[in-house]
Length: 60
Image 1 (cartoon, rainbow, N blue to C red):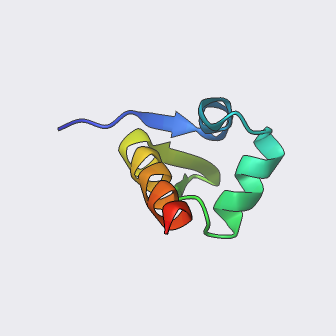
Image 2 (image 1 turned 90 degrees about the vertical axis):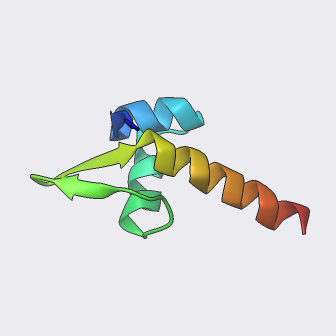
């Protein structure tokens, strides 16, 4: 099982957000990510799971 690693720019594009918004969400711990050498990285599987969790929470 492999998961693509995305940069802040890629995750912002994927979620159709501005980079600044994606960075803020990651820094606040609201977007699942991790830092490598001071730069944010995101596993695509984690982002997709986060989306699914958000969809479930909204429909309740």
